[in-house]
Amino acid sequence: MNQLGGLWRDTWWVWVLFVALTVVLGLTIGWFFYLLILCLPVPFAYFAFNRYDEHGNEKADL
View (cartoon, one colour):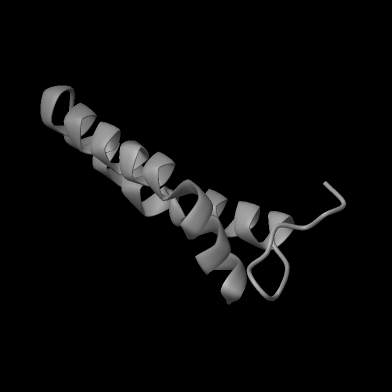
């Protein structure tokens, strides 16, 4: 599970921006944008397990 920590360490500001943008869109346009918050963990986990090794370091072969 160190992959998740490694991705969070390197890209935390991007994910916070995604959540903030989703909340703003939910407030201004419609409630269905809040469903995107439930979908954000899927790409987060995908990128974490593909880009980081079991120690939380970025894989060198990319």
